[in-house]
Image (cartoon, rainbow, N blue to C red; front, side, top):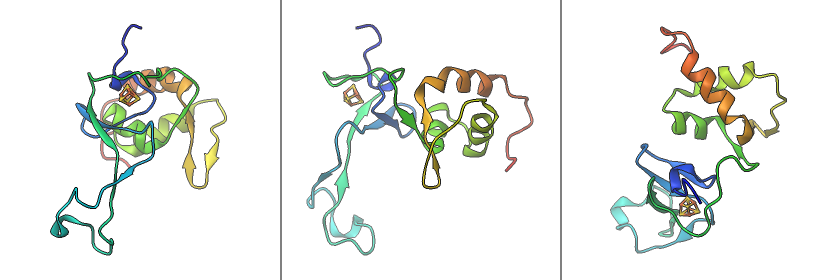
Length: 130
Ligand code: SF4
């Protein structure tokens, strides 16, 4: 399969562009992963973590982004390295009905090409607007 890599997989949640978390499966618990000093305040010593991968990695669970699935505004902002307000504005400008789960817009991933195109064609000087 061409382009079978984590950064093209529907389960990949990018952290900094090069490295991300695989969200194919629920987080795993590992109380030994962090020292007590590293644990978030109020935790009981157990901490969930997702497998971290490089964008160029892959595995047999790969599924392309184009398959029907959803992304939140925050996930799209991370994927495209854009501020959330800008992604939200683009998503709200689409003619498609965007389903919600509580306060979150669940953006169908088949809209990603249109969103990406609009983000790249947006007017300069919009940085910092909220
Ligand atoms: S290719 Fe495999 S490891 Fe990478 S994000 Fe997809 S499911 Fe996870």
